[in-house]
Length: 258
Image 1: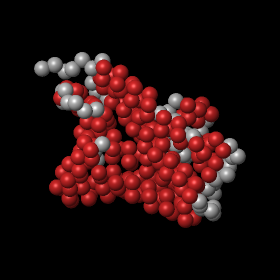
Image 2: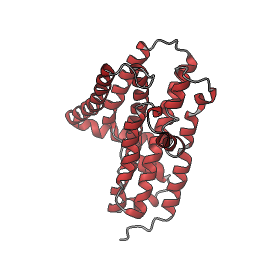
Image 3: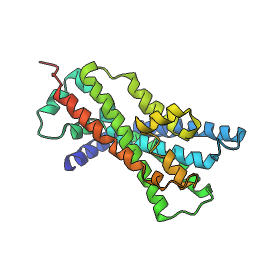
Image 4: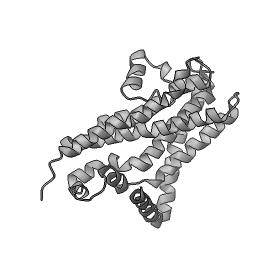
């Protein structure tokens, strides 16, 4: 962990060397998802609810998924850009260092401009909590935090799986963006509004549903299934097979040669 914090400090200081660029990129990361939220507001101005979900209930779901995605992009950006390490041969140097390959790949690219998206998500979450007609307790706030952590692990796991494919394909595959960016766009709305096979796929295969949909059903008392309150734990566990697959890929890496 000491090495990881050194990586974080180095990237933070280097990105601050170009303050204007850093500020503009951060603002861009703030306003792009903000426009998506505006479109959500316009949708609810036309329709009072979405299959029983109100604007601020959906906004809370939106904030959870975007907060998770922004933190995951900030931390795991190295895996998203891993194809460059394979193509340029720099991953060979990673393998000869006596440190975890995962820590080194994370440290290769950390994007602090993603803080803009994170700030926007926090603002939306705050607005949602203020306008929702419900009593908040320590347990409910803890559940929100658990949902965010679960989302970070799920998105990071997807980035790791995408990076692992590069051991065989060299270039990254767009199917990864389908599950990462596409999954983010889909999971910002309640999964229950989609067809059953889509809901099942994004619950049991790519566990977006356990991040916010099922816990929100319990939080808003739309179900009496207490089990739904602990489903975010399964999102955290999603990282385990992803790391195992990564280690399998590292073991089969043939090197770029010299």
